[in-house]
Image (cartoon, rainbow, N blue to C red; front, side, top):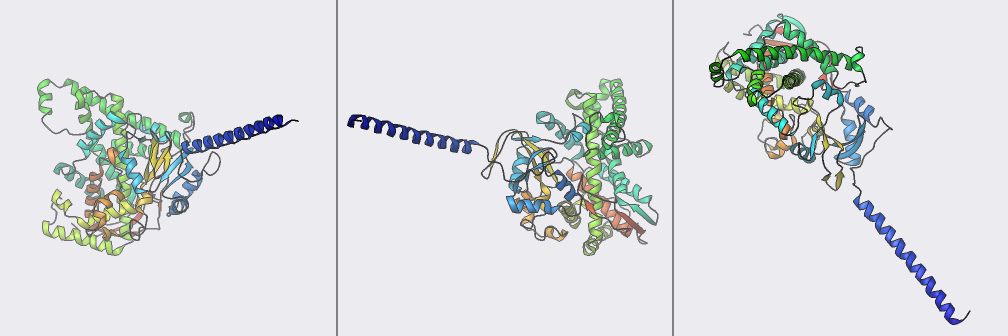
Length: 499
């Protein structure tokens, strides 16, 4: 082979080598680019196939101490981590900053998302499931009706319901406190919605509500309406009965309204509406359909009935287990009674003076976490601390994980109402961003102040009229909802000096 041929061959080899190097560089660059473009989810574990970590979570939350489930994952992955629960990949947040971002971004970057069992039982027109403008108008109506507990007639009605329930207790009696609390909250909510006083109708409706709520976190079997022996099947049946009872009331009120003349309607427009149904009938020129009003009232009954009654019960449990707090609470209410005089009805100024009572309520909310968190779904890619949560991903913002974190609250897992007494960080903006027992943003619970009033009135009369002790050992569990396992039975004794 002559020199020219050798040079040509060498040049060809060089070209091939350079081309190979260029191709390799190009492929590596592309791979790096793909990796850079791929969303970086928060770290975590998806657990077992299909089941994920659902069984571990349920098992933990059925105990009095579910914290290890969260603690282990936060220690391993950080405050925002990925898991797989209730059938799909879920980003779990124990980070207060991310939680506040999610609450504020409702309707834009995220929207509410709940299990199908809950959405079916509440109905398509419930406040919980409405979005955008439809949610705003219903939320505004709810605030109009339930967000003004300073009304003296409403305060007086709450006090009457509490006293009527307590008068049924013998001088010495054993009661299941959660059941008694639920009677108060249910009858109050019914009165606010449809103006019906306690009686056979309300008690029949309440019994169906118990079955309906039991179905919220049950398995929504296909054709469950034909399987009445299942929890979900029973819940669907009860839902039909509750909706039917509310529909009958609403239709009657619509007929009565149709019979009114223009003069009466003009006069009615100048007075305060007597209940939620009347608010709905007159709102926006009467544009709400019958089905919308039924679903709306049904969902408000659930909210008013369940959460406040559990909070009342757990507050008494915590006080019973903390004698110093109970003694200070009694002193606050006894001093108030001495200043007012016995047998005087409570007024708004009395409620505002119950400072230690409010500390007890705050601490009960923080420790018990009646609302442990909220589910949301990403409407767009969300970027947080270097991670990308893709559009469509389910997110759970855990209030409980924040409230029970020792980094945010000293001895966070101890009931300590005195932590709210001093003007410290819990009262400032930082504290407000940590403490979210009623949610926040556009979906802040509209009845949160009313719930506080009901609990305050209940505690006022309980400590003045009775002494008590636990009838048997009971404990808190947190799945499917926060509650005491046995309804907290207590032995009551009427105080000899009680009014």
